[in-house]
Structure formats: structure tokens, C-alpha cells
Image (cartoon, rainbow, N blue to C red; front, side):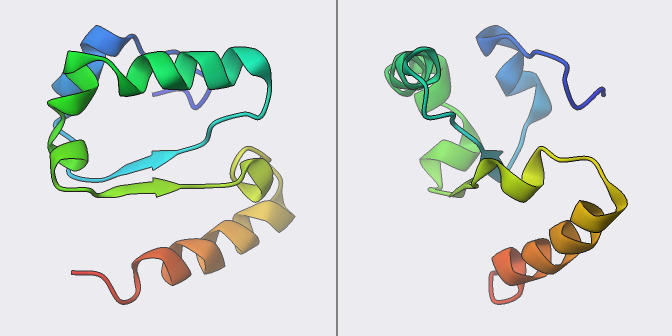
Length: 85
């Protein structure tokens, strides 16, 4: 999957994700879309949502694609999941 590829709300259940990493922009459109997503029946039915396995991430370094940020990403991923079951 292309990292910039859009996924429709109806496609989310197809991934059968047990954990979700979420980045929500601070702009009005992103916030409006996020509120709409939270209120959708599809979102509330996702396994990761039901089990409260959602991680919210800041945009940096997650949306930067450089060698430097890849190193940061590896460190951040370890911090996120080191002590989780």
C-alpha cells in the first residue's frame, strides 16, 4: 500500500486491524473529518476501537520520509510498544 493512499471508511474493516496508529491534523477540515469518523458506526465497530488499541501520533516524524526520520521512527516504535501485550 502506498503511504499516501486514501482509504475509505467502508474499507477500514477489511484490514482487520487489532491496533491503529492515528495522525489527525490540527486544521479545521482534519478535525471535522475526525469527529465524523468518531461518530460513525463503522469506526465504533472496529476491533482496535472496541479494544481501545488506538495510538495517536504527532505528524513529525511519522509523515517525513528521510533517512534521518526513519531512524527516529524505529526509536519511537520501540517506545510505543515495548511494554504492551
